[in-house]
Length: 261
Image (cartoon, rainbow, N blue to C red; front, side, top):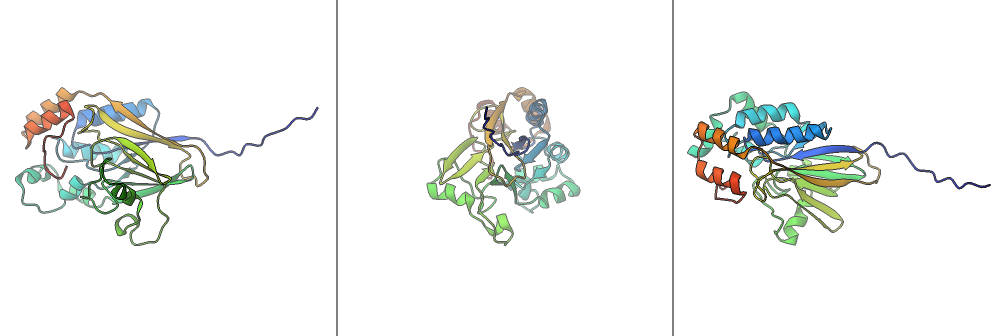
C-alpha cells in the first residue's frame, strides 16, 4: 500500500504582540489594558506614543510604559513635553515631569520596523510625513497610501523596502483597511478613545522576526475600565481643560481638547 506523504515546512510558533497607543496619562485605562494583555499570556508590548498629556497622570504613565513595553515610539504630546511652548496648559503637563523623564521622551524613536510572517510592519505615531501630520480613515486615498512611503523620518536617510503593514495611533479611532496589497491599521487609544468609550488596543499574531511568508492576523480588543475613577483622578489633579476631558471619557466624542490631539 502506497502512502502519499505531504511534507509541511516548520514555520515556527505563532506569537502575539500587543500594540497600544495614546495613553494620555489615564492610569485606570492603562492598568485595565495591561491586565487584559497579561490574561492573554502576551509578553511583547509595543507602544505607539502619546504617553502624556490630556489626562492627569503623565509621570505615572511614563513609568508604567517604560517597565511594560519593549518598544516605544514618540508621539506628538511626548515631543511637545521636550519643547519650550508658551502655552499655560502645555506647561501644566510639563511641570509634572522631571528632567530625566523629559529626556526619556526626547530620545524616543520616530518609528519602529519589524518582520512578522514575511511582512514588513512599520509602526509610528501619526504618519510617515510628520509627527503632527494627521491621517484619518476617511482621508483621501493618496494620503492613506502615503503612510507606506519611506521618508527621512522613518528610514533615517537610508534606502529601504517599503512596509507591507503600517500601524499607527494619534487619531484615537481604531480601524483596519486593505488596499494596493497593503494593510493600514490604527490601534485606537488606551486613555482617550474617540469612537467607543472603552480602552482600545490591537494584537498582531504571526511568526515574529520571520521573513518567510506565512499566516498572520490583526485583531482589535476593547477593554472596559473605571471611567469614573479616571474622572476623579482628573478632578483631584486640577488639570486644565477638565470639562472637555470628562465629556470625552464618558462619550468618546471629541470636544475640542487641545488642538494637538
